[in-house]
Length: 270
Ligand code: HEC
Ligand code: HEC
Ligand code: HEC
Ligand code: HEC
Ligand code: HEC
Image (tube, rainbow, N blue to C red; front, side, top):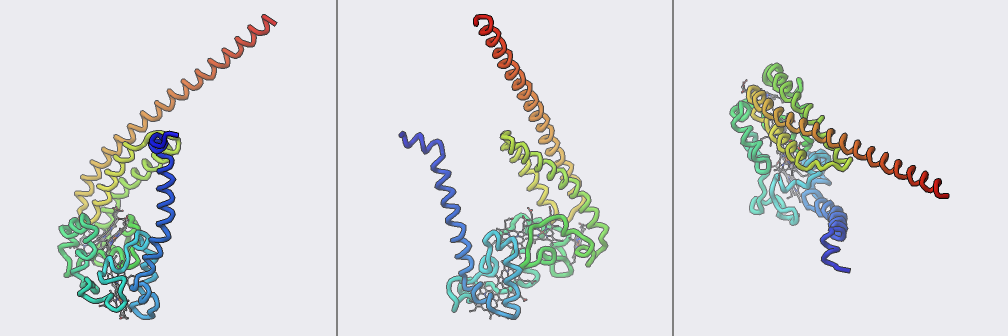
């Protein structure tokens, strides 16, 4: 067999990739558990041990972001693990938290720093951990905006207005996501529409940290225009499907008719 052709079809490549993924998953999990940070802190009872379980249940653990990725230090050397000479940063002070988390969440850090919240950093404003926690960080949703979290420092009214503006767009995004999933399941090519949705969704998710309700409203209007475009495109998919159905029905009736004619002809000659 022509191996080049065989490979170009992608079949053995996907098998290889699958094997690589399957084999590297448990390995990645094992190396993560083997850090000296987790070994030593996992067996502590005080404040040093209390952080481990919440971290294990966090979105960071799920994505392989471990103790040393935030706190620095040497995860392979138990004796020097927390030595500043090995990059150990310790616990950040309150005003250092946005840049501590912002090493990885750069865009969000910038939006936050220029917001009313960022400007109040160090004198009454919330930091990243006020809203997300430090070790028990979960996937972020608009549920974080609630009376309990947002009325500690000011009235809830302004938070509620911001949330209402964002919820409207969120609902539209979810509806489109569900439709795309159905189309994809039916074998429709959804790549371009998926990309458009992804970009609109990212822009939308960045909106919160500026806590600027007027801006959220203005940008939401733009994002909704983009979503409208994607949904209009769904109209095209529907009419394509309709056409395909009609052609299908025509083809089936055509062959039935042919079969009938054939049968009648044979009867005449028999
Ligand atoms: C051999 C044991 C051991 C190892 C290994 C270890 N730690 Fe610690 N760590 C401790 C102890 C003990 C404390 C103090 C806990 C307390 O106050 O109850 C501590 C405290 C900390 C603190 C808080 C420091 C402070 O100033 O309050 C952080 C952050 C920390 N460890 C992160 C790490 C990271 C990251 C690693 C791996 C790179 C690591 N640790 C490895 C034993 C260890
Ligand atoms: C996503 C970043 C992040 C990760 C991952 C992370 N930490 Fe932390 N940790 C922080 C922040 C931020 C603080 C300061 C919290 C605050 O001020 O509320 C902190 C505080 C601590 C403290 C001091 C707690 C206290 O009660 O004073 C210890 C100890 C600690 N971390 C150890 C660890 C260990 C061990 C791991 C791995 C299991 C870990 N951290 C993983 C961000 C992180
Ligand atoms: C070493 C890099 C790194 C640091 C430092 C870090 N994170 Fe993350 N964070 C990640 C990764 C990777 C993910 C998972 C992928 C994603 O959703 O972006 C994530 C996910 C998140 C999410 C969920 C995002 C979502 O999709 O809903 C939140 C919230 C979050 N981090 C907050 C924080 C906070 C708060 C801190 C500081 C205490 C912090 N992160 C520090 C890497 C980091
Ligand atoms: C006043 C509360 C608050 C503060 C302060 C805050 N966040 Fe958020 N964060 C939220 C809310 C609410 C969302 C969910 C927004 C949404 O669903 O669109 C969110 C979403 C996120 C996400 C997910 C974005 C995405 O693309 O899905 C990350 C990551 C994140 N925040 C990290 C941070 C970091 C890092 C900081 C500090 C620089 C920070 N947050 C400060 C409330 C806060
Ligand atoms: C730790 C205190 C604190 C918490 C918690 C907090 N805020 Fe704020 N917030 C502030 C401060 C300080 C300001 C700026 C001064 C002011 O306008 O009162 C502010 C301002 C605002 C503004 C007005 C921004 C502007 O440009 O006018 C909005 C909107 C807002 N916060 C939303 C929220 C939401 C939503 C939450 C909950 C997820 C929240 N806040 C939680 C302290 C807080």
